[in-house]
Structures are given as C-alpha cells and as structure tokens.
Length: 206
Length: 206
DNA sequence: AATTCTTGTTGGCGTGATGGCAATCGACTG
DNA sequence: CAGTCGATTGCCATCACGCCAACAAGAATT
Image (tube, rainbow over all chains, first blue to last red; front, top):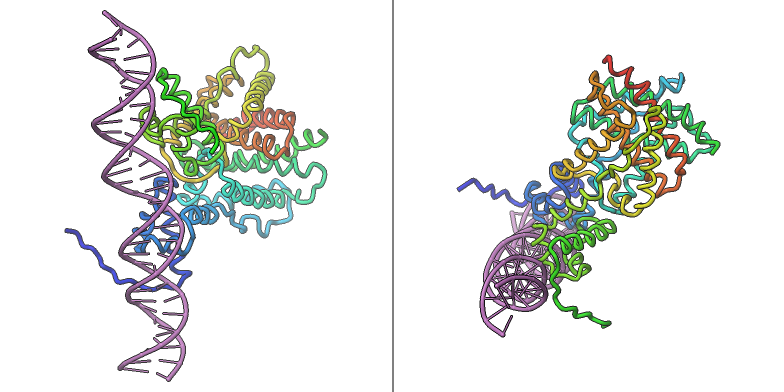
C-alpha cells in the first residue's frame, strides 16, 4: 500500500544532522512525555536510523537533557539596554519584553515549562538551577539591586521564588486565559516591587 | 550471598497488599525518577512478584499516577477551625499549619513537588490541576474571600500562581536553606495579602 | 575518470523492562 | 478433610535501548 519513500541514504554535515534531530526531539518531547516518546519515534520522524541518535547524543537521556537545556534558556535581550530611570519602570520594561518573547514562542515555551511534576533528577535540577540564577541576575539588574550585599542570598532566594509565580501566572495567561497580558504585567510588576521594597527589608534584619 | 530469606508466599488482604506496594513505590519514586525505577525494583523491595503490581495497578504508569496523586494532596486540616478574626491572622495560621505539615514530611514532600520539568502529560496535568483547585479553595476560605463573584476567576488564577511561589519558597527553605521558616511565613503572608488586597482590586476592573 | 580515504550512517544483536495469561497455592468454608 | 475463591506467581511475547561492525556518500588523490 502506501508510498514508502525509499529515500536514499543522504550524508549531511554533522551539525546540520544534529540540529535536525534535536529539532524533531524538541517537537516530540514537547507533545508527549519522556517515557511515551521513544527514540524510534524520533528517528523515524527525522528520517534517520535509530542508532544515529546514539551516535550524536550518546543516550536517550542525554538527548532529552539537551532539549531541556535549549528550551529553558532565558533570552538575554530581556534585560539589555534598560534606561536609567526608576526600578519600577525598568522592571516594567523588562517584564514587557519577556512577555513578548513568551507570546511569540507560545507553544515552545509551554512545553518547556510544564507543570511542576515530581521525580528527582539531579541533572534536570542542575539545569533548572542554572537557568534560575540567570533569570535572577536579570531581574536584580533591572531592579538596580545587583550589588546589595546584606541579605543578598535571601533577596536572591525570594526573587527565584517569584520566578516560579511568574511561570505559573504565564501559564494562567496562555493556557487557561484567566489572566490577560496586562493583568500579568500589573500583577508581576507590583508583586516583585512589593517583594524587594517591602518584604525584603522586613526579612533582612532576621 | 547473604541470607536469602525464602519467605514463603503469604496471602494478604488486597487493601493491605495494595497499600504496601504503594508505600514502597512512594519511597522509590521519591528517591529516583520514573524511568530509573523499574517495577522489578519495587516488586523486590515489597517482597512480591513483579506481576502482582500489574494485577493491582494495571501498568507502571498507573501506579506512578497513584503515587503522585497521594503526594500532592493538600491536607484539609490546614484550613479547618480557623478563628473568625482578620483575614491576615487566619492566613497566618493557615500558613503556619502548612509549614508544619511540610516540615514533618520533608522528604516526601520534596520528592513530590520537584522542580518544574517539562513534558506534557495530560494525566499529570489533570492531577496537578485538581490539587491546585483544592489549595486555592483553602486559601480563599482562610482569606474570607470564598464568595467573591466579581473577578472571581482572576482572583483564583492569582492565588494559584501564588501557590507556585509558595512551593518554590518552600524548596528554598528546605533544600537550599536560603530562607528560614519565619522568613517564609513573613514573605508568603505579606505577598498573598498584597495580592488580594492591592493587586486584585487593581486588576479586577480590567 | 578511477581509486582511495574519511567518516556519516545503518542493520543487527544482546540485554533488560514491561504486560498478559494460565497455572499455583494460601486461607477460609462446610 | 475436601472444596472453593482469589491472591500470587512463573513464564512468555513484545519492545525499547545501547553497542558494534559493516556499509556507502562524498571529498581527496592519482
């Protein structure tokens, strides 16, 4: 029956092949979950032999980690060239840019930042940790609090926690539609300001 | 080469056996991740044949979902018998009880609420959704806002988002030690109050 | 153009994990 | 003590994964 396209074996540049496989993996892992997506699926979709995936990525897990790493990255453009005005305004701009990014890459971002599921995985933990640190740096820079020293770790911890709320609120916006984009903007700007201006001083003296 | 304990096959009440397997699964899934823990591991640890797991839970996935469901549930004791004082005080009490629960079940809770990993899984999504709704009900009840009608969905959405911050902050406390328990109490009480008293009114009129 | 060379690519094998099924054996009944 | 119910198990078919040697596409060399 169907047309099997006996496409001849074609040789590609390693980088090209690698990113093609990565692209397919991103899509499939985004749609299904780790265990429901098999390397055979990815190989078939990419039009290559299953073994080639092992050749390029070692194991299924490593491919998975590569995909997660790619998806979790926070664009640096978000906190670049901020005007030297108030922290409030800078944060507002920062947040706007970020919402732009999310809105543009809706599908990809949604599958990257899924619900909080459980499953201890040291390597995933590591990736998320690094990503969180970068995001925290961006926020503190925007808030002009990049060089507080007293209670620095508490401040960073609170900003990281706020990052979780940001992700959850974004899901509310994109998936459920319960909050509008401007709702998010208001809510997140005000909460982060409240956090650094009001809560942080109250907690700092410990 | 040690003592193999050739314990004879022992017949148990279905419920007892079921919960025993569930208990072992909870522990192992808490330590490892879904794919690193095999049903053989669970069966061996539970002193039972691997096939019995299929008999009780159908598939590995269903067992996993059962475990997740159990771990994510918010105890109802948290919002029971609250004194009829201010919203602030009621929320404070509520939060204290919650932190008690988390502190007591530290390990279990930590493995249940892992980092936010990606991977669309409709069934996990469903479980988390239900769990979030319950938690939101508890908070709104404590805040004496259970029967607001205008902008109800926005309010709920914001409280759900705040729940994510709560989980993240709890991780900061338990895992990294960057925040103390009293820090959490201050931070979370103030942020949720700020959210419902200040942000919500600003957003409600849309 | 023909040959060699490099290395991207594949088929196939071994191992281990999963789920289903029918046979077994433990405990209770009369 | 025989009979029955169903909890429990051994076994098998299937499939996913990682590894290895062999194959061949395209460049380099003669």
